[in-house]
Image (cartoon, rainbow, N blue to C red; front, side, top):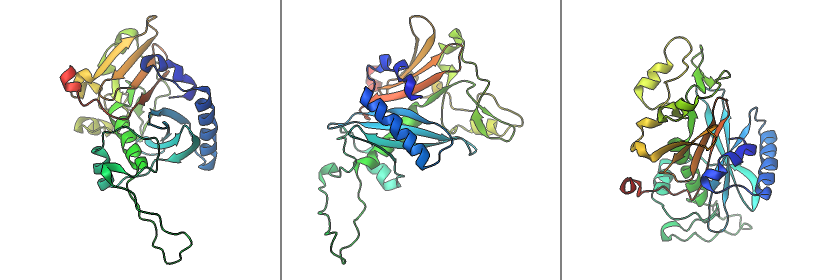
Length: 276
């Protein structure tokens, strides 16, 4: 979501960014955009809480491929230099999946599962072996970001279309949801490449495909992990995810404005099935 729209989801989660964090991110996003010559916008993705400091996450969407590709950047609340989230091997993904403790806030933290880091080699020793790559908190952070985005990132029906060249693009003619439509979960879809065969087949149909090729959130199990509501004035709809507590999405009624962000610990609610 746009950084200046963060107050749209803050009342839902009870969290926001302070002036220092907003200013630091604005400068960092501009710097990263210029360094990598990114043609599009950098968007605010969320904030993951740590024991000593928090992580701020930024999202870039590359629309040049067949389906929009997401790239994630992170920084801490003590250093606003945005760094790309690392790619993970299958081994690192498996290791990250088994950790449920709170984040420390230190990207270089290595002492997971009681394993102490090795002593660093003497940098002045020419015969010293190169440092061995080990699993660190930054790898877990990258895994959690992608997991949350896969499970939670949503988009209103009609906001994405498949053009005549079979490329998924943002719909410039999207005008928003009506009040009654916005109250239904079936009006919201996962912003990810479709995982169901019907959606993949729909993308290959001739002509422009306006909807129903993405995965609808009503297909998630349990469906009760999603809640939908309206604000008191009836001008915005709110979507919340109860499995990843802290993800909130809003869509302004009758307009093309929408967005979502995550404010949480980065740990899923594993007890959800017993709470419904």
